[in-house]
Length: 126
Image (cartoon, rainbow, N blue to C red; front, side, top):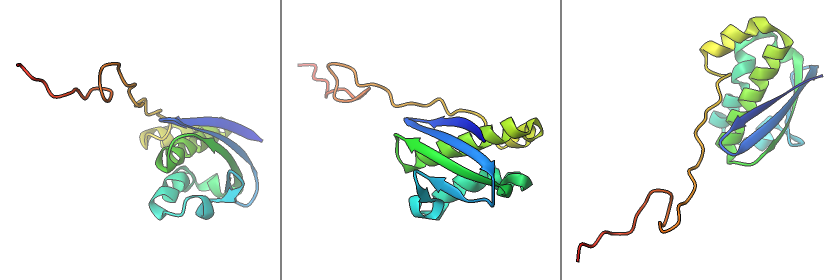
């Protein structure tokens, strides 16, 4: 069993791979049950489609935090990292698709004296 971690925004996904028939389980639910939108579930499947041998593995995922898009991209990164751990030859394939690069953008914290992180109250000269 191989495990890897993927992160995106506030979402953290722990991915576990083992030999099987290509079943994807996320937080105890099936992929189509957890991500009902096809555009989001296709993000999760992206590294499996790039690597032909990807359908030979059962994928079990525990994901916490963030929204559904951030969770999907965190899972995608975790699956990609796990495949690289299995076989280092997959790294150039996944790297060209930017599936191994962590997106560093995070939500900026709110500053005191302001309504949001950067938004200010209306300026009045007099």
